[in-house]
Image (cartoon, rainbow, N blue to C red; front, side, top):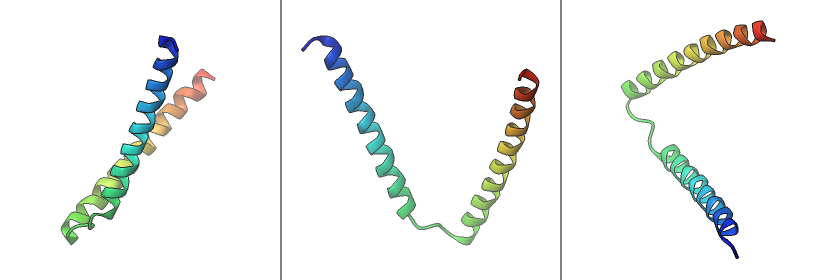
Length: 69
C-alpha cells in the first residue's frame, strides 16, 4: 500500500473516532441532572436569547441572499 491509501484510512479512522467521541459526550451530558430551579431558569433565558439571535441572523442572511439572487 502506498502513502495515499494509508492517508485515507487515517482520515476515515480519525473522523469515526471524532464522531464516536461526540456521541459519547452528548449522551454523557444528556444523562446529567438538569440542576436547580435557578439553573434551569438561567438555561431557559439563554435558550430564548440564542433563538432570538439566530432568528435575527437568518433574517439578515435571507435579505442578503434575496438581494444577491
